[in-house]
Image (cartoon, rainbow, N blue to C red; front, side, top):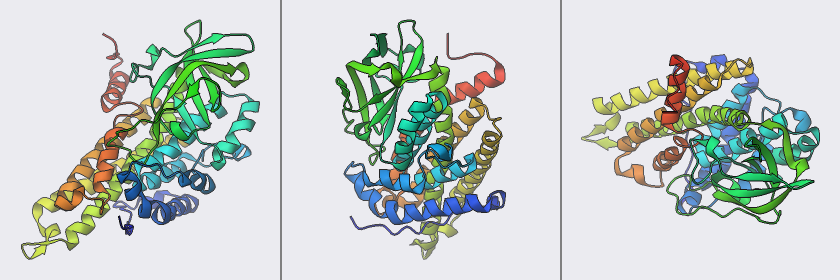
Length: 395
């Protein structure tokens, strides 16, 4: 497949750039240039053959996309949340799988080690994860427990200076290529604990998940633990209870909210350009009312989502954002992006299903993004419980 030329121009209908600092805009432009140079020319081919572009791990580390909000003392960028959001927006504009690689590393691996780990753990793991020397993954979801992580069956039992870990995790991004996994398991007291499992520990394996029609350029796998001996120094000392892994998901959902809109922006830009160039009935299809309706609704929805994401990022910077507010942003962005991708595909007609354009790949990817780290329905119920005070999760 011939490399696709990336002609992307970012939509900014309400001059939201005026809300950004020069540094934030420079960070965005740096990541955008990286995507145009390194991701767009190769991603269709990797997605077509369901292959993970391993070279991006070091590239993303060099670019500072791993743990950008982690303090620089541990290898992170020490950046604010608007900068982090813009990074994720630009990466997912390229491909959801690329953004997944980065947001899992930063929000689900580096953040819990920084937030809940010991100083020794921070110094041992964070610099290598930040640089891309190591790739990490996050083990919470299980074969029988997705939306209800409290029911997890993975267990640790005390065995002196180590614990014995048994169980399995499913749908784990980065798993097949990870050197470390932040895993959540219940102890003998039924308390959820976090621990760092390293590749090479006996009984630990990461089978690759095959046959995906979505996130095909992302590495997905299982984590299988068969009497794995994990030193107690690998337990996250400050992580006790389900609140710890859920706090990690809040950080990741924030990145998804920005990322999904990046995918939407790419589909809108592609559809707008196509509508101006494609001639039918002796004039551009963009001159027809129904196509203009689609495009007008797309840019309106994108603009609303950009404003919502920006406001949540400001609250994150001020340490005022609630998990429920982040939940709203994640659900809104995913639904908005999925709708925009489908409309863009219609504007492109038959060409929309080909690898010559990015639209169908984004569409397939977003079917995963709208489901993982809290499904669309779960996020609706999170908002519902927040505004009514009634818990609809339990009968």
